[in-house]
Image 1 (cartoon, rainbow, N blue to C red):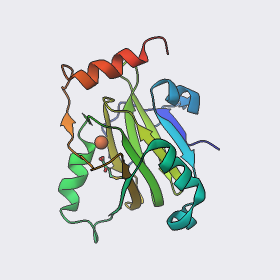
Image 2: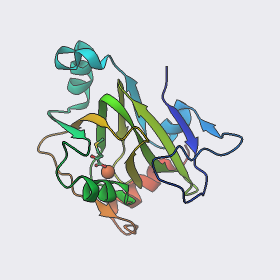
Image 3: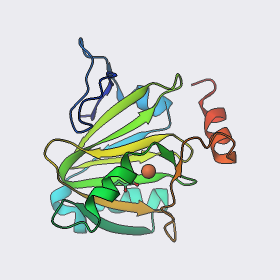
Image 4: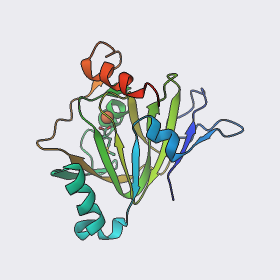
Length: 179
Ligand SMILES: CSCCC(=O)C(=O)O
Ligand SMILES: [Fe+2]
């Protein structure tokens, strides 16, 4: 089964709230794939020795992994990190995150620059393509544990919007033509 995604409302309520429209305007996995966002559902209970995960890591070349636990008692500079994660940004590489426990929201911009909220929970693996504008927030449960994957030596540098003159941004937008 896929993850849940929806167009966000424009309320300035707490970022951790769902921000669904009324009526809800959901998006399908196919809609997300048109934006270059891909999702797998795995069994997070066996993440240390999951052949499914190993297969994806081999196919995609995700040679690097680490685990980040986002909770006020475990993450140093918790508040600053959450503020940074929620600043709209892009990366020069794909952002690959696998939720091992808890849940969280990844928001991405669509072709018309509207915010789409993607609700991720235990077992959801997602890849956000290099050059897509996005942001991250915990939800009202205030906890997630995520595996971060990368091709080779990780580069976590985020470039806050605007970054429209970046080659990777132009390349990303060009990749959306026709989808
Ligand atoms: C789920 S990991 C926390 C978010 C993050 O690493 C990022 O926004 O780059
Ligand atoms: Fe990011």
